[in-house]
Image (cartoon, rainbow, N blue to C red; front, side, top):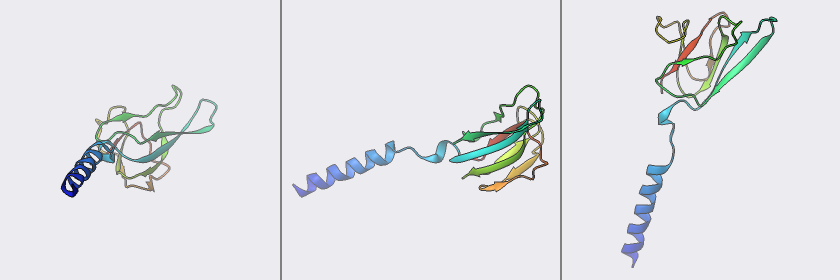
Length: 113
């Protein structure tokens, strides 16, 4: 009887371990950035738990050329690019829980995980 209970418990633990979501599919946390609108007001936007290893073009209003003041509050390193499709040279790299200098301008990002 104890063997059957032990096997059932081990099986249940294995199923739980395989079905529990992990952060392997992207960064966990918030990445935020600033931009100016046409009326010159500073605005902020954010990405929550962004996907990893894929290019993310930042959502900016039509009258905003670039984002700035990137703040990486995720568990992943983020690479900043000055173009829309992450095809330019690496512009700046921001480690987890750090900020890019405010003057660094960006249009797309890619997270390390």
